[in-house]
Length: 246
Length: 246
DNA sequence: GTTGTATAATGGTTCGACCTTTAGTAGTGG
DNA sequence: CCACTACTAAAGGTCGAACCATTATACAAC
Image (cartoon, rainbow over all chains, first blue to last red):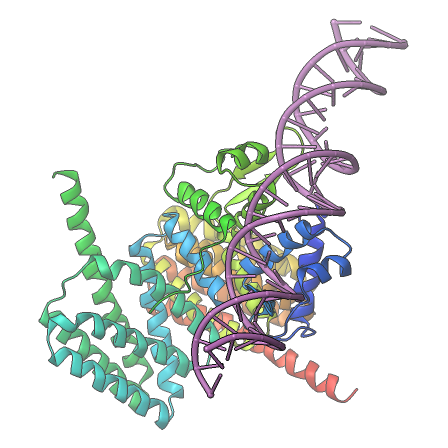
């Protein structure tokens, strides 16, 4: 019900003031803050304390600090990376396993596909088909190009999230994708069959979105990412078994 | 493809070392770090630089710093709050509107209900029914107790997320709930009818989870949160209209 | 015009001192 | 013997001044 009331820290006060100015729009993205030596006078504090405040703001993703003359603190755009980073930490903290991530992803991709199928314009569809064509290209070149295919796969999913027009989907999708991406590297090589399966999935999903069939698009998208997930979890098991009896 | 290569900052090196020690488990939650004056010698740096590193770690939610003798830096448990905080910032940055949050929430609650209906044990159901009983109690007492009802409502949803056993759902759900909560305050009073509607929803959802009907549970959960969302968006519109022509 | 160099502004680091908070301990009075 | 007070030391918080490292700019040399 109540929050800790410690407010004896000066740097925190500085952080709050600058943060408020940014959120209220008094400081726009791209704006430069005064130099440290000026700000220390403005806030009537020491440079060390002011720098601690800047460290916090930088970590929050609100400012970026550049070196040299003409450098200084510049207000950043929306701090979306921080959401990814904080979850990244949680995953590495082993609070969240691959299985958990994969399950969650399945649900999100399903929702994204359903929403996208209701909102996709002709331009959106055209964009998707360009990506699809690239994917076909890489699959045709064989398993050696698996990395390219995975990259295109990611871009297609990202495009779907974009079509929903909901930044929450974009951020969350990015976050999950970034965090699951780490595992891809460990679980190759992919077979040609698997590549082809995934490509077929993508084609069908786009086709269903074209017709606006939310139900089917959602189900197919879920099946698609479940394939990814099951494969990786399966591989992970093999690993841990191998690790137990080497 | 590549990342910025600036690594000339000493405090960043200190951050990385301590972060790695925590993630690798060499430092367990609850462990105390040495005092600033000791660490400055260990890392062979100045106290100011070391303190900047500690500020970053504190902001990341990895450590907590206490004052006075016997105080110092103590390693925290899983930094879940940071995920909420970073999204909170994004919302306040006006990158994400109530509408976006509500839509995303609808999808998540649907997935949570579906998954929970497959995994709920008898104990889980019992817990839910205890909460349900409390909700009934507050509704019976009338609109004046709307705040209590909303609190129970939140706990029921949180319980559902817990039943899935997937920490991703718990974290994401918490995050969305915390960030949407802010709007509740602005959009009262609730009518008795509305209170009753929501209670009915909750009862039906729990009943469907009891029977393990994922489809229906999901649909009902979505409808439930959509009601919340629509009501708030509607109120928000009234507000902005009122603000335009006062 | 291009290249190199000096300059100054700005963040990054260091050192040393002092203040504030806090837990423990010794002392004091009942 | 107990309870309260006051002192002490440890730890974070702040301050100021100096110096180092990086970089954009202006100016000079070719």
